[in-house]
Image 1 (spheres, rainbow, N blue to C red):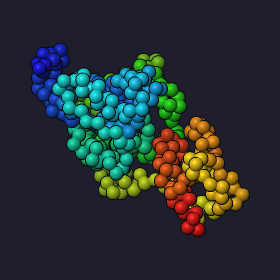
Image 2 (tube, protein in one colour):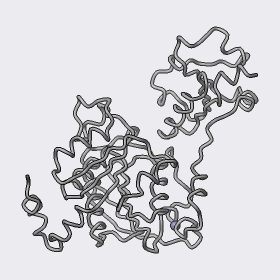
Image 3 (cartoon, rainbow, N blue to C red):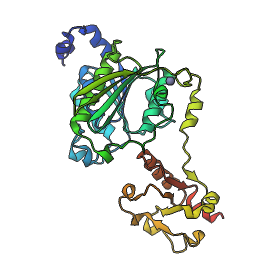
Image 4 (cartoon, protein in one colour):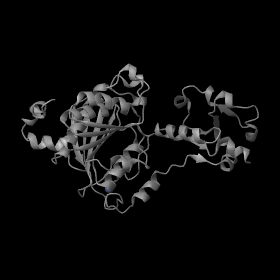
Length: 357
Ligand SMILES: [Zn+2]
């Protein structure tokens, strides 16, 4: 049995720390969304600092292209859920930690349940849709949030404490940003050291905020350029017209903003059929000779003939994906939108709707 005081000796003796701070961390519950390049250093730093309970939320699976920066994974973990693998590594590493793994995507329907017990949420996600959703839910439940984003060699960290009367992310960006406007790691690349530096900084902000002495003010942005080594802190003002941080919107009203409508029903799809590139995502064995008669002369392309889908899609075209019942195509289109493809749609009901014509 490891002695706690002995284990944490080096940080307990630090100025401004002591056993009281240590006990506070051990009693803390933190939710980390994203077990990727930022999540790794953040999770390890929090686990080893003695945060008592960590929840790891990530629906993604380990891929070989993650390994150069996501150091908790090894090649044999390929295909496993990141949240599960990270949990098993942290359990071995940190003797005073309880870890929970949630291999799910954060969506409007589950975000409240995922964070409701947390003292603090760390947003280590890589897309704007998740960032706004996590922020809005933290604001609604008055949870502390540290949010980090990186772009190549630069990054920014924001801290929000919704208990305080301070500006929110919606004051900074009244219009939600979409994922098409800034490249993600898969598109523009990322250096492992950049992600590790920002994940560690994020953990440091989280620790100080958990100890109620935040090193970034709520509603303040810390930016750091690791190429020039220049850092800057700047604050932004609360917008009196912001319906979010003035709590004028109910959670139900906020949820409505997240409802996506990428599904097109058959009558509307047929009215505009030449405007779409129709892509059949069923397997070759499901496709029958007369399946595309309803399209008359508009061509349909089976997906198995389109390798590397994301790269193959052109920005100026509109793609309508269809399958047998519209379930697989809806799932694919959700995934494409998450990856920043805005011009992808799903045929509601799939070919079963065609049979009902
Ligand atoms: Zn606001």
